[in-house]
Image (tube, rainbow, N blue to C red; front, side, top):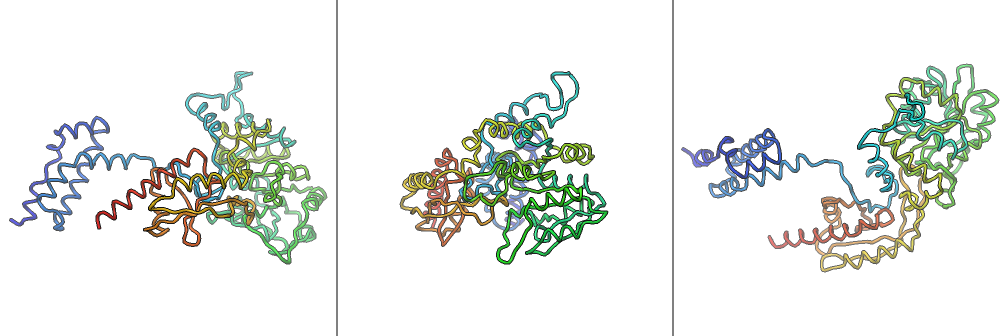
Length: 473
């Protein structure tokens, strides 16, 4: 009998392991089925390593002795949620990859209040009869924007699809060639229009579109004029785009609805210089646009949503579309959206909505925080320096606009900046940073003050890991 065969015979059976007190303790924590599955997988790993000549008799004994802790670790990893909190130190405020607009704790409390029990989502407490879920936000947003009606779906792409499918199915929709954008994740306006069942009719050219181009394209099959705000790119140089007032006048003359995809969800005009070219929903409606759609989780600072506001007859038609049920939002989104709109209603939104606070934080405030954090990080392992830099709005809002800030540039004295960035992502609360000029860049504009201690802990743990690796060499 070979040595490997003799070692294989030392592998205990599952039934024998199940009699161990430590394994019984695992069964008390998890189900018997999960523990058995975990043991079987671990024994198979050991069997493979033995057959490949990787395990000696002594090492096998050590591995068997640690079976309970190994299986526990594997089960913890298996049952741990994959979606979790990260620290966004990238300086991109509306970072699509890390969840766009963060909600305020109070918004999360509003969600918890309706999510952990029953609610009057579609129940009219006055009449005791069925109500409509849009009532929880429509009156407030209509008052804020001085519009007739409003509805909400699960995101702005869905809002565009619903509008087109409801108002222009099998009909022509006019769009400037310069506005046929890709909105992220390879989702393009022409593709959404195709799926909605409308016929795209391009007008003008990529860089120049005139009001006459729209006028000449109108025919008996034209059902809608769509204007898409190019919020994630800029065309500069030899360009022209009709004024919104020109399109409003043409829409009224031709009796064709004008729809604006405002995208970023800037509700009111802002005094921030970096938002000077971003149209507000309020100003677009005031110009006379018939229907406006925008995102709830960008500059508005609320939950993911596609919000549609404008003329009552158009909004009512969209509500009657069977697709609306497939695209509607749930009670948690309504709760967060209503809380967010209340902050706009009472004028507190610039103080309590995280995105708005990040936008308005002075560079000097960020500098002070960066200096304090740098002193805590500087050590035998890491060194840091404060540098002037720029934060970005992100999320397809105000492209190329840069918000002055100060960043903390960190380097490791023993390891590459790429390794440091990778280690930060492996922290218990992952830290998302960026690399510039061979330095790790932390922009505290997008870091909540209470997260700074977690960053310090992350660097301390990385230093310990680096020391442990060095000691093995």
